[in-house]
Image (cartoon, rainbow, N blue to C red; front, side, top):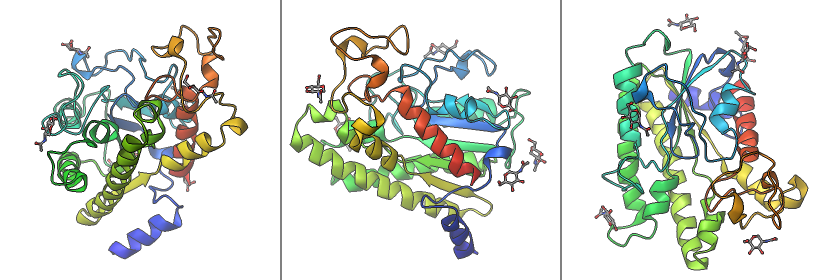
Length: 304
Ligand SMILES: *[C@@H]1O[C@H](CO)[C@@H](O)[C@H](O)[C@H]1NC(C)=O
Ligand SMILES: *[C@@H]1O[C@H](CO)[C@@H](O)[C@H](O)[C@H]1NC(C)=O
Ligand SMILES: *[C@@H]1O[C@H](CO)[C@@H](O)[C@H](O)[C@H]1NC(C)=O
Ligand SMILES: *[C@@H]1O[C@H](CO)[C@@H](O)[C@H](O)[C@H]1NC(C)=O
Ligand SMILES: *[C@@H]1O[C@H](CO)[C@@H](O)[C@H](O)[C@H]1NC(C)=O
Ligand SMILES: *[C@@H]1O[C@H](CO)[C@@H](O)[C@H](O)[C@H]1NC(C)=O
């Protein structure tokens, strides 16, 4: 049984994937950090407006999925919070108001699990997507108070999958997990020098390996679950490795004048090139163009 499911997943592509599901996904519930948030604040009401605040100077992957790549009027509930970690008690976020994955899943269970009128979700028409770990790894890779980073990641995974288990208890069956992208190539890390880069590179690889193993284990532990990993790394690396081909003027730095966002997606403030020709908006966040490519690849994989 287990191996059959695994085979099916393998057939669907290099990334193990929930196949042929995109056209029946009526609800997309997203959990994560600044790469994922669109400013939606469910505490202000399940039907409150989506402010559309992102870290990408434009739309982010979730908005592209719900907009440009939507085929069946997928309704998005984005519970992500900028700066989020899996659990603030394990990895403190940059400020105490940040909602961790534990908080976000708590909000789901409280406000969306009861299926309010605007979220008449069920097991087969809903996808639960997680993109988390950027800040967990980013904030903890240099810690010397843990037995090892690898050991600490096991603690993080137990906490993360405890939350995923609770969504399963609430009826969730289809899951998508994005790997942590190569933040070792972000200006924030490059500026800290080769030692920091080497150290986070190791931590990122370990976190992502453990994520993949835990996703597989989660699926095997629960009947009726499809849980997939979408690997963001080949997309980031391909774009970064072929900057000229894709038209990025700079993939190791950013333009300071743009780092807090610009009034227009094409703003140009000399001597910098137009903002949309950069890969990184600031020290850690890629532009909407990268999110667009990512969302397109996710939609294609989900439709395979
Ligand atoms: C959704 O896509 C799959 C795979 O392409 C296809 O087999 C199925 O018929 C489609 N379902 C709907 C409701 O369009
Ligand atoms: C979300 O809404 C609640 C209730 O209106 C409010 O207390 C809270 O400050 C808001 N959070 C953010 C991040 O705006
Ligand atoms: C999503 O696609 C449906 C069907 O093509 C369309 O009616 C709807 O306007 C689209 N929604 C968004 C937010 O783009
Ligand atoms: C889930 O909702 C879809 C409509 O979005 C419906 O077609 C399907 O039958 C429902 N499934 C269950 C198990 O209720
Ligand atoms: C390690 O140190 C960080 C702060 O430097 C702290 O937030 C964290 O809780 C500590 N972790 C453990 C396991 O002691
Ligand atoms: C990219 O930007 C950084 C920071 O401004 C700068 O140091 C570097 O020389 C730039 N690289 C290219 C290829 O322009």
